[in-house]
Every structure is written in C-alpha cells, then in structure tokens.
Image (cartoon, rainbow, N blue to C red; front, side, top):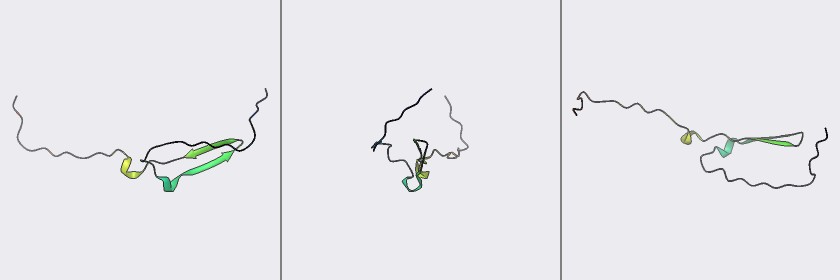
Length: 60
C-alpha cells in the first residue's frame, strides 16, 4: 500500500466561534498530521443552578 501526500505550504482557516479559551490552545504536528486541542472557555461551559422552591403548592 502506498500513501502519498502533497508537499508544500498549506493554509487553512477555520471559524470556530467565540466560546473558546484561545489562551490555552495546543497544537502538535507528527507524521504529516496536525492535531489541535482547543478548550471551551469556562463561561461557555454548562453549569447547574439550584432552584429553591417556596412552601406553597400550585393548585390546578
């Protein structure tokens, strides 16, 4: 089996949105493969919020 990859300079631009932590992006290049790790920003992560109820019950 033969696998060929084109040689030269390549450019790729991606639009990923605004909810990413751009200060902690990591990139690794190995055997012709570029891997990116782009974490989600803390403020964009889902979180649980406790909802406290009153003592009255609703009547239907």
